[in-house]
Amino acid sequence: MLKAVLCLAALVACASAQCAPNGAMDVEVPAGGKAYIQSPNFGNGDYPNNANCQWNVNSPNSAKLAIEVNSVAFSLEGGSCGFDYVSIFQVNSNGADVLLGKFCGEAGPQRLVASSTRVKVVFRTDSSITKRGFNISFSDPVCSPGSNLCSGSDSVCIRPDQYCDETEDCPDGSDEGPGCSGECGTTTIPPKEDKNARAFRSLVAHRAMGAGNRIVGGVEAEPHSLPWQVAMLSSSGSQLCGGSIINSQWVMTAAHCCKAYAPTAANYKVRVG
Image (tube, rainbow, N blue to C red; front, side, top):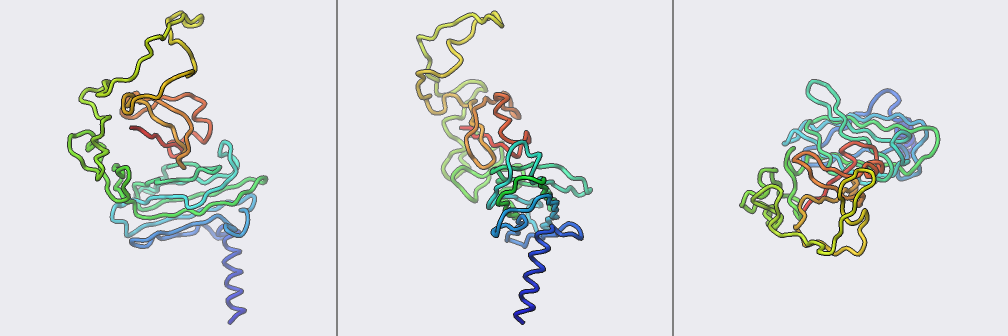
């Protein structure tokens, strides 16, 4: 019996290290539960070089016809995600793959929701640096696609049209906070202004510009007085840069702010309010 157990353990370890040599691994998300995938050797050492793994994740019992993807642990070679990386695809009902995000470094997927009951995960590595690897979970999302969790809540979801509609839908009322304004482009709380600001003439653009190109001796802004200002975060929540909302779908930021990770939407978060 002991030999049988040891042999079974050895077979499992080999299959994991070889990343399913006979094809992709199929994973099913249990009803009301979670499924997990791990990189080869996770928990026992670094993942191998030249790995080529694929998992097909299916959630046939999903009440919301969606799958939420979260990193429990994530550590890959960083850079431009051209060396070691995890790519996550939404598999539509017609079989077409839609890339949701490509991840590397220390920033794995967080609250990444696929509007489908099937997801494909591809893990590839090159022949040089190896790291600890990853453990990724799959579950039914708390919120339906298109809705978001209220701040400070793990269970209450609201749609975008429920923000600033004069009805408090979140338990803490954060959807009707002081940042709500009756007119686009105006604020209910006026921002502080520097009465001593001077203008200078740009030798390049030949137009009047602000008093400086860096913040020196500034003052803390009044909360909610600049609602178009946002914080640019990595998918794991670490601060990267700032930005400005320019319409309902776009945020403008400096070009270098999008060089920290691969330029896909899933690698970045935007914090507003």
